[in-house]
Image 1 (cartoon, helix red, strand yellow):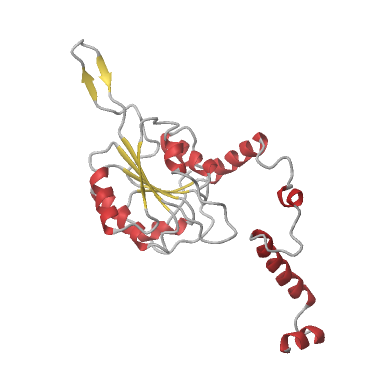
Image 2: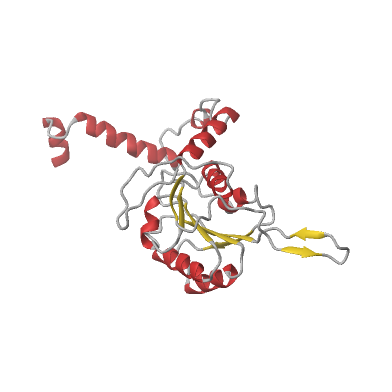
Length: 250
């Protein structure tokens, strides 16, 4: 009754009521509990350009221009794939073994009801394999257990390159613990922030960090292109991150 009176008197603006009603209706539509229900054709209708090749191309271009290298102290980027060990076979042929690349990614789960559905498999590993078809990958929990962290460190040892994805690490401190343990394994490490760029504040000792602001395929592809040198990073950090004076490399 108090809310009704406040609305009638104007203490609650009409615009706020309309906005709240739209949010409630949106959630009901999402769960299919509107009365009457939204017609199927209306629920699935959308511009024909959604998902078109032109829009996918545009999304990739935007992702490429957004990727930000916050630090690369050890000069890992761009990473050369021609640095694999050489072996001379019994036939006398000098063969160059491919670089052993490992990708470690969190099992991404939706954090809110209004974001994209989590991917099937690792979009980061998928992108890396466009450059290194034989790259290995390991998926860990969004909040990795002590056992997962230990296993990741063991698997990372002796690799030519280890690429670790983080996803909202400020909510899952175990992700930072995993990054630190993997870095201690001794292999070159590149960390890719797959959502918020703030994760880097939790492991400043890691030498190379890339922010992509998204886990979508286009963003992961852009990150892989930056790592392996087919795209020059031009993105600039749009926020202030606590801790060391982070800057964008371009």
